[in-house]
Length: 162
Image (cartoon, rainbow, N blue to C red; front, side, top):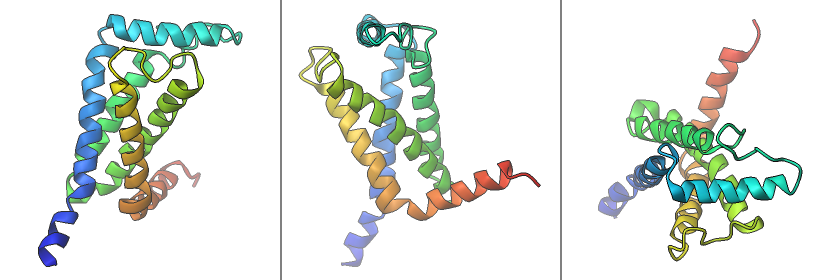
């Protein structure tokens, strides 16, 4: 039983590593303006344009591939740095950033014309987004509850007026 318990303690770090790999792998598409990325964000921008929000997903838009990629890079960095026992609160911050970005990704796949298979890859991109969303939720609600509260307290201590 002790042996099993010792292995189970590595689950949150495994989840964090998996999330980081998915986020970091996607950056080669987002930051190089890959045609698949142009297709996805172009389709989203066209949809946003039909709602009088043209440019929202364009190269300079609020939710451009560069903005989303930068948040994913930040999330990955925090998740990886959080592997060190002293910085578990940063892993919680990375999970929170991942949760926010993946909530948006899954929502846009489900509720816009983007669909769940925009790359004709059998839904692999959507499956990765759902897995990262589930792992982020699990990290925050099961494994890193105390650490997210600690991170919140640290942030409040910095921004709270004296």
